[in-house]
Image (cartoon, rainbow, N blue to C red; front, side, top):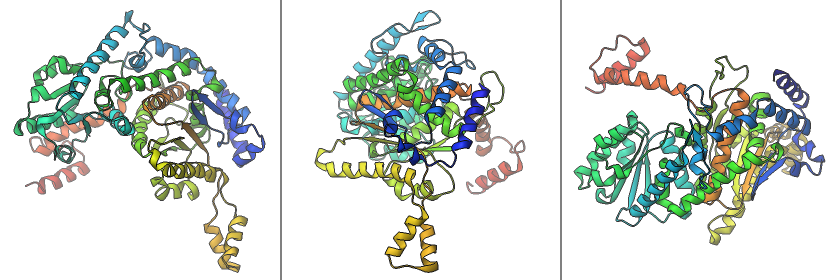
Length: 530
């Protein structure tokens, strides 16, 4: 595999100064460097990838045995080798119920039974006097459903949904303020029911319900497999929905963690969301590499991050309702592929997961796009946009949104040369040194890569497609890099230290075991809390 990496590095060196725009001398460039599934189109033609480079990237994927690893994942094999687990979030959206075996046991009957229980519960809540749902979780137990609920706002016909994740008391205080404790359902999302931030917020919510006339036993639900702990907390067994350890937190919105979404949009729309994910699964397994949307998105990512050496990528949804998608993908990608150790225990010879960031357009245009266009860092951009918005009476808004989205990707590619900037300044009446000075500020280097994912409209099915697309992109990149995308040991150390520091901050344990910087900060806290 190293030979392919070396070849790709040589190709990148050879084309580093080639204008992306020059590739469009081929009139078929856009069509040939796009992939489609159903009505969803991925255009990666505005990158400096040519046919030879793409062929080598496909060969890199083949050498990494993507196809075999992909089938191992869908079959329920133990591909999460550091934790000894299968990786089967895909089974949560396997609505047709084809058998999926884990250690010889078909897990689909249990999954479909849990889905049926969720639907019965959601219907009962939607038909009740409940006006608000507060989902308490953190990480994947918060980012996924919070993002999806916002994304599918046009389909909300159930109770209002609120999300609490931060252990900062301000988060739950601000969320509960103004809610009616008698008509609020609290959902506690924690697989082990021990996550300290989540359980601290859950106890605060329980006290709030009790103090304001609510009934915690009737108004609490749990998304957890720790039935003993949920029972001890006082939650009725009929309101507890568990899931197996082969569903990672950041991949869990398809199952019980998505209960708040189901309550908001209804079971039928939730099933459409699952169908979208299932459709992307089918496409990912069946399509040839050049026609495979997740594969080509992943190979473009490998080209930019590992070969070109661009350390970040910006996710830029031109949809206000997808405003939380960059945050969601930060966890999905950075917690999955933010590793430095390969499966075999050796250090990765390549950079691994890039830094993922971004915001919804057009707001970002008035914030960080300045750096993207004229800064010294090259930031590959991933635009997402729907051809049609939901607000038919505001169609002119969406047309302007589309124009901005397409203009940004074109501007990033084209740039503006100095001669053009000079002509603009001359037209404004400038000349001589002042014209040169002003023109220099109006030069855009261009040649900055981007992809665009475009689809008819953001509906439940399409959102399911988008999330599954990015999940499979993470899988492909992880396999090529030789890392395990499904553990997250990097979050453990901070948790352990926080537990010990809590007692120090409370004053029940000495600070002597800590470094001088931490001790100084603890002393400051103590001085200002006496």
